[in-house]
Length: 234
Ligand code: UDP
Image 1 (cartoon, rainbow, N blue to C red):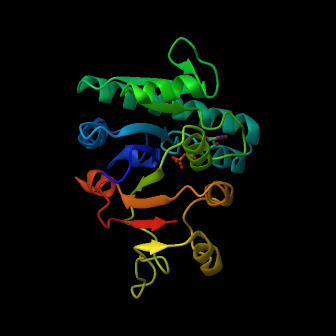
Image 2 (tube, rainbow, N blue to C red):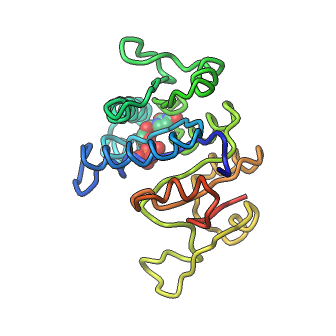
Image 3 (cartoon, rainbow, N blue to C red):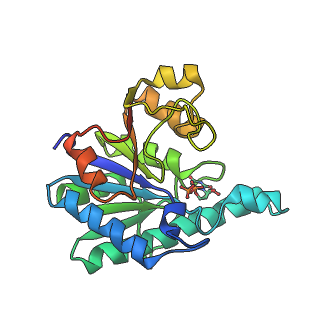
């Protein structure tokens, strides 16, 4: 395996499956199965999950809600997704821990870096909920932050697109995909990989990002094996 410890970032929207909102149990089970395949290979797995399938602070703010209030609601949405993913993983026999940046101790441990690392060393899958615990941030930033903190080898950003393109492939048919690209090239070309805060944090700490299509069965395992899947930003 190319990586020993990974930080997998899953967007909340991906959990909707074919639905317009919420969590699709079928999609959740598929993701759990993909994760099981890499766990079987001895890879240590930390996961950050988004909340966009339930609530986004900016969306609330655009309809007159207080942004900070909305962002805390978004963070709670990530905890709901984290609990759902935890349930799906445990139902197929995997050991997990959910740690949250906001304390919700009846359902999750508070985030404690040393404890998270210990869980990973013991082969437990650690899900980080509630993002960074701060409004005005995203779960991409939380993913990079936690990835750096627990010394992950890479951020695996599992999305619906299969990598980083020269232009939006849905709008420009001549767009081509990068297999490999440097952080500075991404900035120079004005490409969109993650929001600026997350991207800069990753670049400054030399933590590579692989953007890949999580909905294609077997892709996560292939990425972990080092096959040329998606786009690696380094
Ligand atoms: N959020 C936040 N701080 C964080 C992470 C998330 O305030 O550190 C809020 C924010 O409102 C965001 C929502 O939680 O819109 C859901 O997260 P995100 O949009 O990153 O989820 P994704 O797009 O991955 O589904």
